[in-house]
Image (cartoon, rainbow, N blue to C red):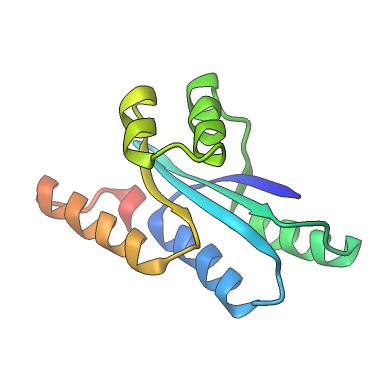
Length: 129
Protein backbone atom coordinates (compact mmCIF):
# COMPACT_ATOMS: atom_id res chain seq x y z
CA UNK A 1 0.00 0.00 0.00
CA UNK A 2 1.09 3.51 -0.70
CA UNK A 3 -0.02 6.97 0.35
CA UNK A 4 1.07 10.12 -1.47
CA UNK A 5 0.02 13.43 0.04
CA UNK A 6 0.70 17.12 -0.31
CA UNK A 7 0.98 19.09 2.95
CA UNK A 8 1.10 22.85 3.43
CA UNK A 9 3.94 23.16 5.95
CA UNK A 10 6.65 21.48 8.01
CA UNK A 11 4.51 21.20 11.14
CA UNK A 12 1.95 19.04 9.33
CA UNK A 13 4.74 16.92 7.87
CA UNK A 14 6.15 16.40 11.35
CA UNK A 15 2.71 15.34 12.59
CA UNK A 16 2.63 12.57 9.98
CA UNK A 17 6.07 11.34 11.10
CA UNK A 18 5.00 11.45 14.77
CA UNK A 19 1.83 9.54 13.91
CA UNK A 20 3.87 6.77 12.28
CA UNK A 21 6.26 6.60 15.26
CA UNK A 22 3.29 6.34 17.62
CA UNK A 23 2.04 3.28 15.72
CA UNK A 24 4.96 0.86 15.44
CA UNK A 25 2.52 -1.87 14.37
CA UNK A 26 2.10 -0.06 11.02
CA UNK A 27 4.37 -1.96 8.59
CA UNK A 28 6.22 1.03 7.06
CA UNK A 29 8.67 0.15 4.31
CA UNK A 30 9.85 3.73 3.77
CA UNK A 31 8.78 7.35 3.92
CA UNK A 32 9.95 9.96 1.43
CA UNK A 33 9.68 13.67 2.25
CA UNK A 34 10.22 16.27 -0.47
CA UNK A 35 10.15 20.02 0.08
CA UNK A 36 8.75 22.21 -2.66
CA UNK A 37 8.46 25.98 -2.78
CA UNK A 38 4.77 25.91 -1.86
CA UNK A 39 4.56 22.82 0.36
CA UNK A 40 5.68 19.28 1.14
CA UNK A 41 5.20 15.95 -0.60
CA UNK A 42 5.07 12.90 1.65
CA UNK A 43 5.06 9.37 0.27
CA UNK A 44 4.48 6.51 2.68
CA UNK A 45 5.00 2.99 1.38
CA UNK A 46 3.91 0.07 3.53
CA UNK A 47 5.49 -3.40 3.49
CA UNK A 48 2.16 -5.05 2.93
CA UNK A 49 -1.57 -4.67 3.20
CA UNK A 50 -3.31 -3.31 6.27
CA UNK A 51 -6.91 -3.89 7.26
CA UNK A 52 -9.62 -1.92 5.51
CA UNK A 53 -10.32 -0.17 8.83
CA UNK A 54 -6.66 0.81 9.39
CA UNK A 55 -6.37 2.03 5.80
CA UNK A 56 -9.50 4.16 6.19
CA UNK A 57 -8.35 5.56 9.52
CA UNK A 58 -4.92 6.47 8.14
CA UNK A 59 -6.39 8.07 5.01
CA UNK A 60 -8.79 10.08 7.19
CA UNK A 61 -5.84 11.29 9.28
CA UNK A 62 -3.88 12.27 6.16
CA UNK A 63 -6.93 13.97 4.61
CA UNK A 64 -7.23 16.15 7.72
CA UNK A 65 -3.66 17.37 7.23
CA UNK A 66 -3.34 17.60 3.46
CA UNK A 67 -4.60 16.45 0.10
CA UNK A 68 -3.99 13.37 -1.98
CA UNK A 69 -1.27 14.22 -4.49
CA UNK A 70 -0.76 13.40 -8.15
CA UNK A 71 2.86 14.37 -8.79
CA UNK A 72 4.20 15.87 -12.00
CA UNK A 73 6.44 13.56 -14.02
CA UNK A 74 9.68 15.03 -12.62
CA UNK A 75 8.63 14.32 -9.03
CA UNK A 76 7.27 10.89 -9.97
CA UNK A 77 10.59 9.99 -11.60
CA UNK A 78 12.42 11.11 -8.46
CA UNK A 79 10.15 8.96 -6.28
CA UNK A 80 10.65 5.91 -8.51
CA UNK A 81 14.42 6.44 -8.53
CA UNK A 82 14.54 6.58 -4.73
CA UNK A 83 12.45 3.41 -4.47
CA UNK A 84 14.83 1.71 -6.90
CA UNK A 85 17.67 2.44 -4.48
CA UNK A 86 19.37 5.36 -6.15
CA UNK A 87 21.32 7.78 -3.95
CA UNK A 88 19.14 10.72 -2.80
CA UNK A 89 21.86 13.25 -3.71
CA UNK A 90 22.03 11.91 -7.28
CA UNK A 91 18.23 11.96 -7.54
CA UNK A 92 18.13 15.56 -6.29
CA UNK A 93 20.65 16.63 -8.91
CA UNK A 94 18.99 14.75 -11.76
CA UNK A 95 15.39 15.80 -11.07
CA UNK A 96 15.93 19.14 -9.28
CA UNK A 97 13.89 18.24 -6.20
CA UNK A 98 14.73 18.82 -2.53
CA UNK A 99 14.64 15.40 -0.87
CA UNK A 100 14.53 16.02 2.86
CA UNK A 101 14.24 12.41 3.97
CA UNK A 102 13.97 8.94 2.49
CA UNK A 103 13.81 5.69 4.41
CA UNK A 104 12.87 5.52 8.05
CA UNK A 105 10.83 8.61 8.96
CA UNK A 106 13.02 10.85 11.11
CA UNK A 107 11.82 14.05 12.71
CA UNK A 108 15.41 15.24 13.13
CA UNK A 109 16.06 15.34 9.36
CA UNK A 110 12.99 17.50 8.77
CA UNK A 111 13.88 19.83 11.65
CA UNK A 112 17.49 20.16 10.44
CA UNK A 113 16.34 20.96 6.89
CA UNK A 114 13.92 23.57 8.21
CA UNK A 115 16.55 25.24 10.41
CA UNK A 116 19.17 25.36 7.63
CA UNK A 117 16.69 26.72 5.11
CA UNK A 118 15.45 29.43 7.47
CA UNK A 119 19.01 30.35 8.45
CA UNK A 120 19.94 30.70 4.78
CA UNK A 121 16.94 32.90 4.00
CA UNK A 122 17.01 34.96 7.16
CA UNK A 123 13.26 34.51 7.70
CA UNK A 124 10.75 31.66 7.99
CA UNK A 125 8.44 31.19 4.99
CA UNK A 126 4.96 29.85 5.66
CA UNK A 127 5.80 26.38 4.29
CA UNK A 128 8.52 25.94 6.91
CA UNK A 129 6.35 26.91 9.86
